[in-house]
Image (cartoon, rainbow, N blue to C red; front, top):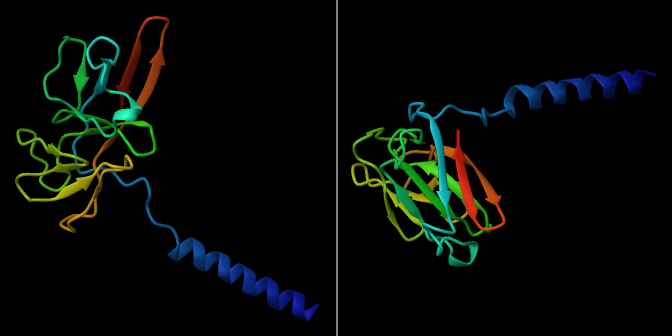
Length: 157
């Protein structure tokens, strides 16, 4: 009975220790200000090259085509990752946060011309690689819509 109490107390202390020290805020807020995102990319008509086989084939959207489209804070970066999934992120550097200076794309990196940070988009996460910041790109949700005659990608926040 004494041994059971001893191990019970030890187990409770371990659990409390993990809860207090082992929890990192994985849902951190982005430093990029909120801006609505609702954009549909017609892959069949506008971007027939934009398929998973053509990794990363990034697309940069800085101007909306329709009044009811929303492209985030500084624009959209849309790409296919090495995980064969479609990804989207804001073109705003989370370190500089300049709406009028969107990231540029160089292969599998999104690059900030102001601070020099490079964000690796190869696996879809947009993690920084230079160490200037530890904050990844602000990500948006993507949904592939496959119709009878068209394939579309919808991006939302």
